[in-house]
Length: 288
Image 1 (tube, rainbow, N blue to C red):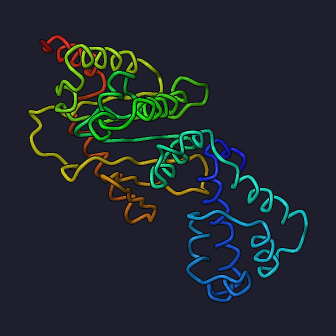
Image 2 (image 1 turned 135 degrees about the vertical axis):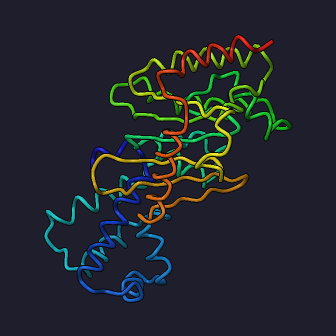
């Protein structure tokens, strides 16, 4: 479990919740009976097991006793995990501009070993330049104070640091050509963004494919999405779908496997990654 600590409380809560769910079901104990033990409802147990709320160490201790986990050697790692799950992640300092629904994603992204994403309108956040990111932020928050804009941009730049660190995730992005030709922020900003994508495409852990206009319709016609994969079996693949003021997270195999098939087909339909750098250069040269 220690390899997930960099994902902060988000991932640790999910891990602890899954362990508690396994222990409960192994004993044949209902959510109602577990909730009664910690003076809570069955809905609270469900949220705890999904990692959607924070844990009280006392509640975890009481549940472990109910589930027959009395050996200190077995209890302490889970109690320690409960304590760690309440420790804020590095992104906590951006809490003023970080809605809860996106805070969950940042924690998952931080722990992911593979991030696959499809974008239609914008360059993926992990591959944006600071100037381009500022232009994107201004679209939705143009009336916000300058300090808030700065914080939103700084958060996006901080998320990118893992890409160039040792042990960073593999990022495989498929981007619609429209996102690359839309001069967001003006021609100069867009040229800088395209040059940045050329350099990022050279990284061994970054694969960028372009879905060209001449492809017409394609498998991912429904909209942008991301798939997060983690090392080890404790966490399932998670599909992330962002909306204007909220997000959806899918982790059931029947859902994630569908999105994985769509992503695989999309990457077959896109231009090969070997053609990306040359095509990015052509788009950059087309900008007036």
